[in-house]
Length: 140
Image 1 (cartoon, rainbow, N blue to C red):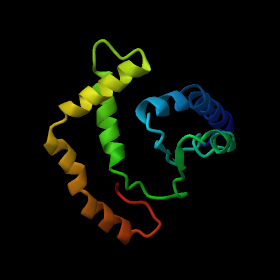
Image 2: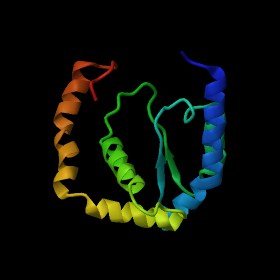
Image 3: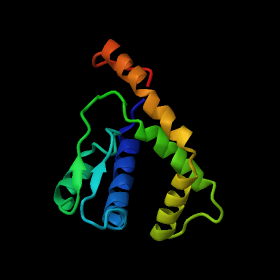
Image 4: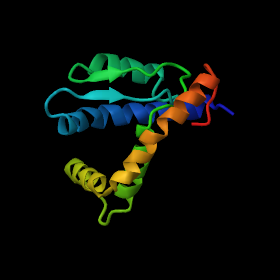
């Protein structure tokens, strides 16, 4: 059941993460100034406070908006989850933004090429599922 207090807490926490970390993260990852920030429609991401903050604070990177109620077709989600899991298993864990960047890059390089081919090969099935359920849920 949806709880407005939990939702508000999550939105406030997300806003805190954005304001404390997004600009420094984007400047490290996209030092060329060509950064592109994309988020999904999770309730905290689509909250009024987060949307307003991004409108006023995203002048040094592009912010892509996710269509409302869109099916999840982004294979990056699967790869991101595996990458985050690999970083979480590292010892010692990253403690600074530069440590995190190094851990992400090292983990990425350790992925076997075949692993990355699997989500790419899944795209025809994902699109077929999307076409069978126009506007509705898909199994992806």
